[in-house]
Image (cartoon, rainbow, N blue to C red; front, top):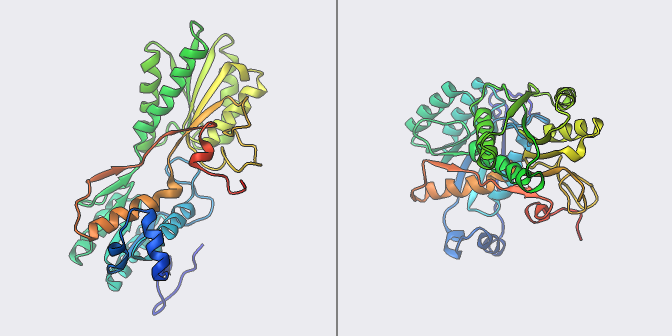
Length: 350
């Protein structure tokens, strides 16, 4: 947590990280993100990133990733770019978000990256920064007239549904199937319905007549075991294709099938691909090359822990006067045991 401060000290929620590596180190690092030597020698930009929240344990985007992981990705990515980074914590609070923008205006930053959930606040932040001639780049939640970087939840859901549908067609041909979507299904959030609809679309591509039921955990994975257990008991002859909206729900669904003695009747694909479902060589997670008996086929990656590597280059392009799309989406792919260590090399691998 960040502590509150009073003037003339900086307002609460703000930290500053400035990175000025030696020239040779900067030239070498720049090559890894496609920058030339002349790029490395150009002027440095001061970019502010106002995170949705830095609060420990608070997860974002219906995944298991935290705001701290998002923030850390910006800190690491800034080392590879001609960027001095100013970090703010919006604390999921409109007043703090407005105060952070005001501080950035006083500092005369070159560009402001806004990650905040409240549309009214985002509109006001956009107006104030526009008046100060400071360009804005938004994450997930739009700021009027600003480019947006966001996950593509419908595409991610479709990847999960297609993977389940293909598994069912391959492993359980001519056997009765039931599709289950489990997680915070009833969330009043545009992203959740898109993820659900994408999963339904993907499932029906292979199985147009398949019955799809939803199991709403109301955001509490601890409820998944009981809910899935009751549903499974009522479907003794069905093979179960389970699309979990997040990794915690996937793990809970797998445990529920195990408790019911129905592991062999289930296949699960999740969303997020956070560390709870994969890990290092010695961690024995569900998605692991050595865990060949897992019914968790994979998890669709959202890469929140790499947002900085995608967003900061967009910001630098804006500052150079290069055009960028009005909407840039996260790359999503199904992470399986076959490629998990390629996408997320374990830190304990020699």
